Amino acid sequence: MIHWLSIGPKMKNKQVHPMKKKKSGFLSKLAPYAYITPISLILFTFVFCSLIVAVIFSFTRYNILIPAEFNGLFNYEKLLRDKKLHLAIMNTLKIAVMTVPLQVLLSTLLAALIASMKNSIIAKIAKAALFIPVLSSSAVVGTIWKAILNSRTPAVQAVFGIFGIDPSMLLGSSKAAIVTLSMIIVWKSLGYYMIIALSSLMSISDTYYEAAKVDGANTRQLFTKITLPMMKPTIILNTFLALVSSMQTFDLAYTMTGGGPSMSTTTLVMYAYQLTFKSAKAGYAMTVSNVLMLIVLCIVLVQQRYMRRDASEI
Image (cartoon, rainbow, N blue to C red; front, side):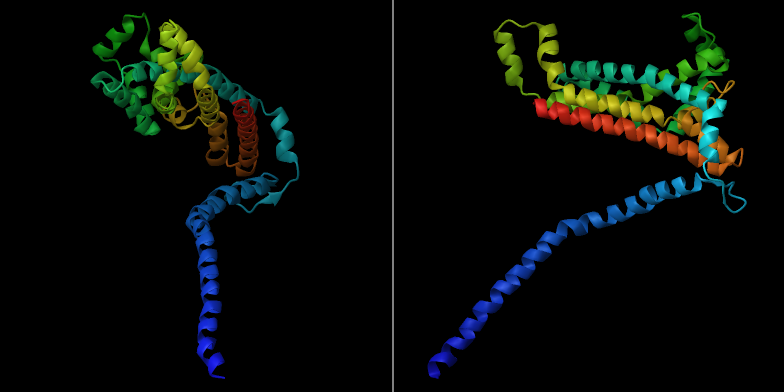
């Protein structure tokens, strides 16, 4: 009897302690999920719920002022014969064709040039100068460029006069406006893609370059045989990021041209905006937005496929 009384408490302690340890281990596994819960709720509320609402209202006749009225597939049938929508899609594709190659090419070349300068003052100034437009508001940038191009001051006229260009025609002509808008988009976003490319370059080990130099490789061969192949995943990423961004063009176009002249710079996003707030056709605008969502989704899926294939090759 004395024997069991003496060892009973000890055995009891040995049984409780593992339970506490197991409980604390379970809580530690839940901790990461607790950290991501707030951002998950925000994404669900403002992203997924808004997508569901857009899909539901795309099947209605809705103009904000009156209750939604179900009209079946009428909005989707209208997409096929809407010439303004077709023009907006063509304008968006034109912007993508003009901006994406330039953004990817120039960002890669500038990143390689800046990386070759290491931590020199010129490299730091170049990075700052290229990244300042990225940090600036698109609305402010668009307003400033519009004021410059429409200005009649002698200084502005003299600068553009060197190239034989009338600055007022850059936004006043339907053919020139979309080209001007595309070039300003490239200028504003170039620093963003350059930083991504530069971070990829900085991760390449110097041993590859040193070994190639020992074998007699010149600067061009170093870039084409080492730098570009090692940067392939980043170049693919920049390409798809720029493509998705071009599909969402709105701020600069709205502040610089308002979609004109003659709808020559009206993009998909701007057309959906005009349908909602100017034509009071919110239901049809959500149908147009769903088209844009499908385009972006297709781009993302293709990107994921390319990234997975590239990773498997490595």
